[in-house]
Amino acid sequence: CVSKSYCRSQASGKVISGEEHFSSKKCLAWFYEYAGPDEVVGPEGMEKFCEDIGVEPENVKAESMGFFTKEEWLKGMTSLQCDCTEKLQSKFDFLRSQLNDISSFKNIYRYAFDFARDKDQRSLDIDTAKSMLALLLGRTWPLFSVFYQYLEQSKYRVMNKDQWYNVLEFSRTVHADLSNYDEDGAWPVLLDEFVEWQKVRQAS
Image 1 (cartoon, rainbow, N blue to C red):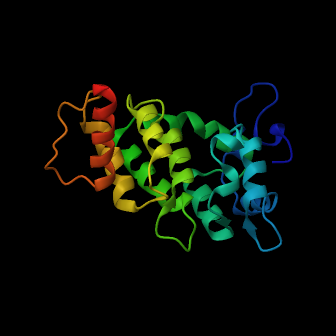
Image 2: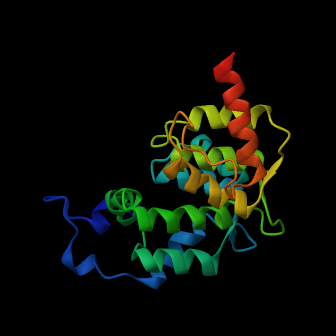
């Protein structure tokens, strides 16, 4: 948007009915505010985008995020019906409500893996995984800070998709004291080792 008044009424602060309709042309112009000569939103563009929408770039590790192509941008923003910064900001309350819906959150969590990984890699590097887990589970999973510490000192340098998916399932089903953890369950070794590590800490 050229200015907030372009999307909103200055008098009421409400979206003007004539501007409610999504414009692919405006959305494309918005994309080019952040895209480089290669028509891709890279690290610098991501950092500026985060600042513009009110998200601290360092909190989402913008410099190591995946790149946005024009097609990905248009597809994502079209699904949200957002063609400028203000419209996206107005969607945040809705998006936050989706995080409280178990089914919707699971889809967002799974999408985050593919969004954040380098396109030529099958796994997430561990630093990016930690940053994304902090965003997605940091406020809701009682064991998150402990799990984060475990990853910090572990031998793991990447997290694969199976491990990523199972961390969410673990966070939802295993008690904070680990009392119901099934050692014979089909958990990945990463989580078996986390439980063993935490039990040693608790016993010491």
